[in-house]
Amino acid sequence: MTAFSTADGTELTELLGVRHPIVLAPMGGSAGGAPAAAVSQAGGLGLLGGAYWDRAWLERELPIVSESTDQPWGVGFLAWAIDAGAVQHALEFNPAAVMLSFGDPRPFVDQIRRTDAALIVQVADLDEARLAVDVGADAIVAQGTDSTISTSSRPTARM
Image (cartoon, rainbow, N blue to C red; front, side, top):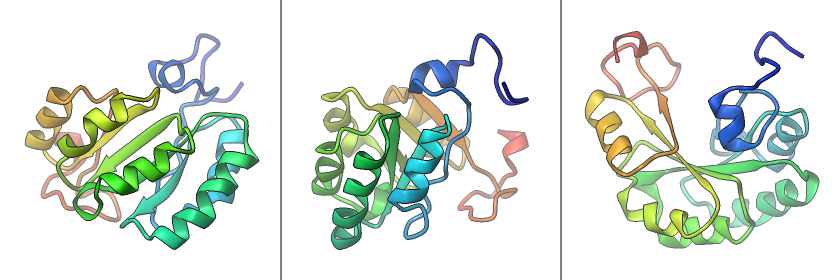
């Protein structure tokens, strides 16, 4: 047991089916299949960084993560930079979660909901948080100016 978990788990661990409430940020080009699988094998949720929908990169990395772990894993995209084809391609590998960041999640919600994948939405302000609630996000990641990469004008502590 670590300082990050309890004997009973957390809402996040129960939602995602992981042992520890630790999630690998899906940084495009950095969070590849091997790191995502390693985090998942260690009990967290490894998120593959799908980012801008680089088809060749995803075709290489999705099989790596899906074949390297029997634990839950997911994929993250920049919502403004993708289309339904990107999400569909990732869903064919049966991720436990799909994270959408920096954009309107609505075009992809129904597609994700037709699977067992949890919907995680990253938000940078209160309006985006309200939208995430409205679309039924299973989890919300609040990112403010206190992160290293942000589109927000507020620190997360004020959300």
